[in-house]
Image (cartoon, rainbow, N blue to C red; front, top):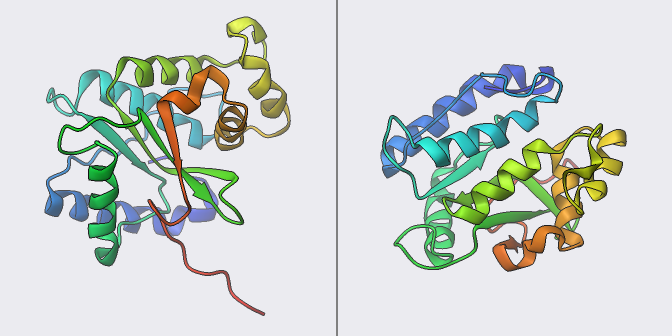
Length: 196
């Protein structure tokens, strides 16, 4: 698993909880510590793993979609039905039609994008979008007309979440036609911050 020192003590516990949740609900669980992009922060590695899983399946079995959870996130028993309802409502399970990518709003407002919980369907657009996004490189701004949007951010903030959020807000790569930003709490919840 990819994580930094801030969550090292809980990442293994979270993975065990998520593995059990996946087994109980009939999902495949994939965890990896392969570094696909050594020049990038751990959070970037998820994109390559998601793409490889969409392209190759899990142990040779094709997948319809990938649900990503950060290493510090866990499935909660009481959220199981809510997650299933969202996946069904957006055509991720049950074979319906829906967006290629489900993103989640974040606090303090849904104007922020949280990529710690996201769903990517196994569609040509989603796979091409992941390939393009992974290929972004500050030394090659010509990768596409939308690349400079992220490259400016990446020089200041080396995480992919801000870049995806900026792409969303600018509708870069026609993202609004292929993705949906759900309100905070639809895919994830978090403990309320402590009040002092």
